[in-house]
Length: 209
Ligand code: 3PG
Image (cartoon, rainbow, N blue to C red; front, side, top):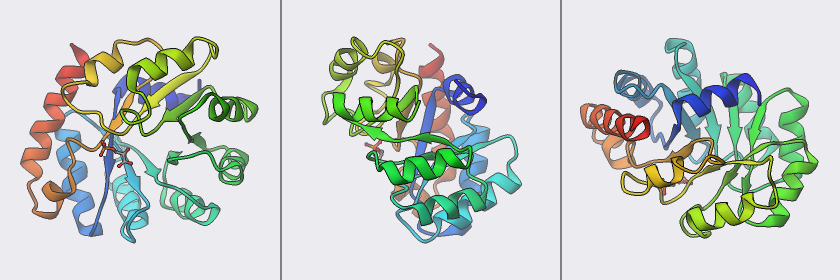
């Protein structure tokens, strides 16, 4: 596992961020860092993603910032140019995976089936996203997938919250969990960054328990 994946493992939770406005990147990063969760996967679902990543990586060097919902090579290039340290996608697009790996990027493609995992293995990957985690079978499905693919580790994302986080993290093949519960779009839009800090603190406490 490379250094970036080791960092993700140590942090244990990857906040999945949707930024409507790049001006929110700074207070959001501050809230996450103050809450002890210096990490963000900024999703390319909005135009603000690229600028948000740039602001976070430049102004918060202690933070591990990646790009999410990367669906095309062009988005991957924009994420990398902005300083993203890892790339996440909901599914496994072989062209996008190849493109990112060729540039030495840490890539976590989404998987939900045995065939997806085998395709990831063909690329030499030993960590994948498991998405949409709860809808695709949750922890039971990860356990079932981990049985044949003994060297694979998973980052479940989708439907994870304060209630089920601990059970995922307790399974040794789970590297970390992704989720938006501490950075809900509504909290960002309405500037409730202190609430985000508190939710981040709570998430970190749960992960450490
Ligand atoms: C997403 O794609 O939005 C992420 O998987 C986050 O899912 P969540 O909002 O259920 O945490």
